[in-house]
Length: 190
Figure 1 (cartoon, one colour):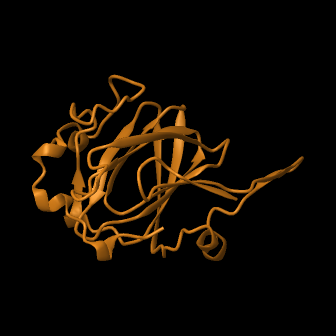
Figure 2 (cartoon, one colour):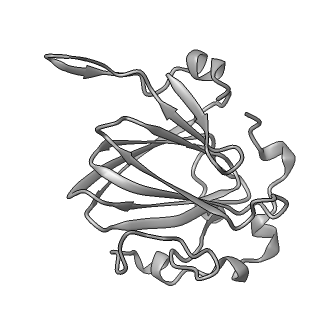
């Protein structure tokens, strides 16, 4: 397994070892001991799976208070995955990064607490799996508009399929300041 720092501090790209033969393939999607040796020392309490069709865009979602770190992988298909640093005290506040994740290459992305996250399905269908460091608390969920002009994310489609909530989400600058305050005790150190 190889683990690389992403451009935004705390985010990590993981390339698991994939064992392939004429029967198919095998890989470990999480192993606390081995991932911990590579600096990913987190505990997960919940797994989620979403199924979406081509050009569905989900996001940009975050939780605060009670933020979640997420280990993301795509089990079927391909997505254009985006993270945005929304930690008010971060030098990279408001910066975004994208990565293509697919079932074919098995790469994973670790998204730390304090980031908004979204993805756009690029294949006919995608099964999107993520492990979370905290339970889902609907009253702490926030959303930022996917096409916020200040963020200027270079999405590969102009007219994605959106939920009403995502379509009408506020801009980053419209969020109350406390929504972007993440205490040091909440952050995972890698």
